[in-house]
Image 1 (tube, helix red, strand yellow):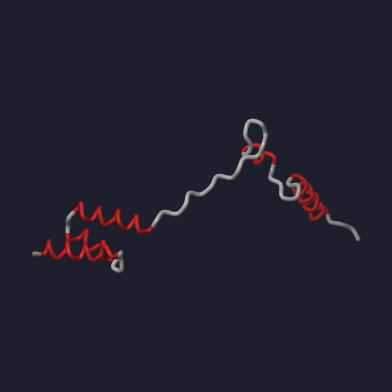
Image 2 (tube, rainbow, N blue to C red):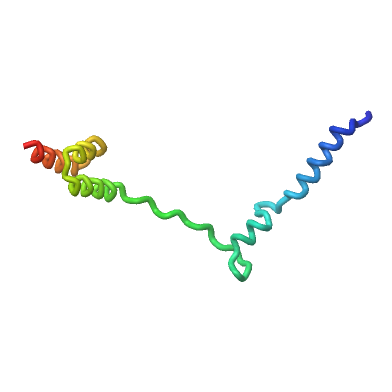
Length: 100
């Protein structure tokens, strides 16, 4: 069987490309290993992701923002977003005071 030049060339190109990206099992490309190393050449730990923020603190900040604005629209928006939160009751009371 005679190989055609185009498929044989493509196969050869794929073989060369596959060989250049061959990595040891579980390894990183050389540049990535150097980028993740300190001055002594030892690998550094991956940067950690900061812990998630406490949702109740975010709600409290949003309530304080609505209270500092002091408008009915701000309290209505807070109530629409956090209607089940205990601070929503305070927002409703503030809204009633504003509507008087």
